Image 1 (tube, helix red, strand yellow):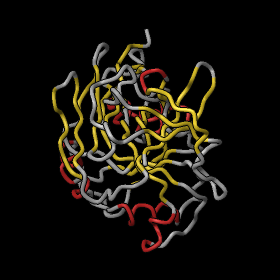
Image 2 (cartoon, helix red, strand yellow):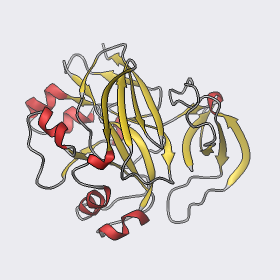
Image 3 (cartoon, one colour):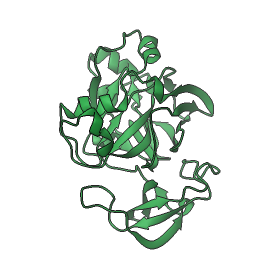
Image 4 (cartoon, rainbow, N blue to C red):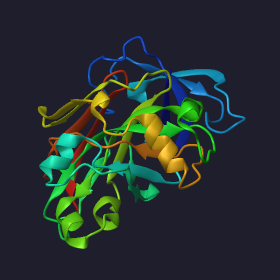
Length: 273
């Protein structure tokens, strides 16, 4: 089931996206969603008492604005989780999962603009990733119980000011600018994410092409490791790492992250000045 968060006028709602035409033509939402419809949900799908109850109202996806499918309290991310990506930046693969955080204010949705802070950074990179969306409060989750706490998966772009990452010696500023965490186009709740193809294109040119089976630390290991450190709340997001092929973005670019079984997240790039 695909769960979307969307706006009709000024009202924000959740809905179930019809899956019959999931690979349809590109829509104005930048989600490869042409021809799809979204069935409105009463309330929201997160939390222990949440349930997906349809209101009976349905909209063509192109008649609504797709938003980031979730507004997390925090985005936890795993760095250098593909061997070839670690190598391309001159790093060794980490001996254990490497955790960093992105602020919730970095989140944007499909078709929203990634804003390059061009007065502060001269090198802003794309990083296509599989994102895990949590469905319940959890802490100290053993690997065998990880599926119980995962609500679903979405596409993410861990946008990074690469020059600031190098100069600062830590990653908070480089990863934390507003608009540096595109998520979408929706959450896929019924998916085995162990071996999915992930591609990132810039202006329709393929830059990243890999599979989630090549993650150094798998989903169960990552979730168990992170929840040993911090409490996860419903709707929180875990970014699982980016494969090799990262590179710079400039104003005017269109960057798309596509993940098999989920869909495509597309964003345009603009300068702040």
